[in-house]
Length: 147
Image (tube, rainbow, N blue to C red; front, side, top):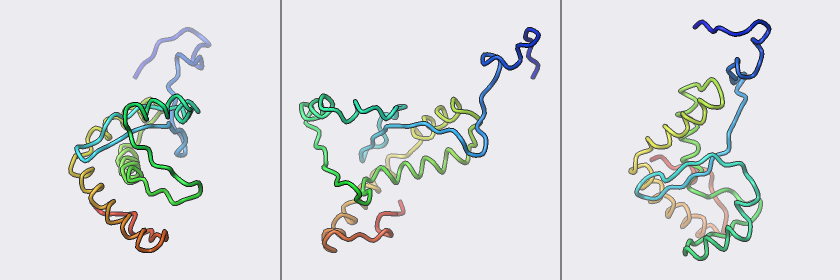
């Protein structure tokens, strides 16, 4: 690849391509899924507006049931299994910069089959039933469900 640029301009940001070194670089994503497959995946900045009162009110008006999540509890959210799966597939493709990382995440998320999501939700009921039967204690093996 040949690039023509003005003298002494080789390090100007517009003339460089950022790369990810030593596993560095990450992005925050927000996604959802149902038994019918993955929903939208968006890049998300972890801003407090995502948990602010207006957001909670919007969710209530749209009749979304939001589960209360006690602090310092094991994360029983079934989407954690999809995040792990996404990470495996993204890592295999070895993104070279943040832009490529975002693009690959979007592509791999869209490839998740509906059957994976459906099976994950079926297994979730069994997991919760077991936790209730164990009076709140959980077995990590229950959370890592093969689908």
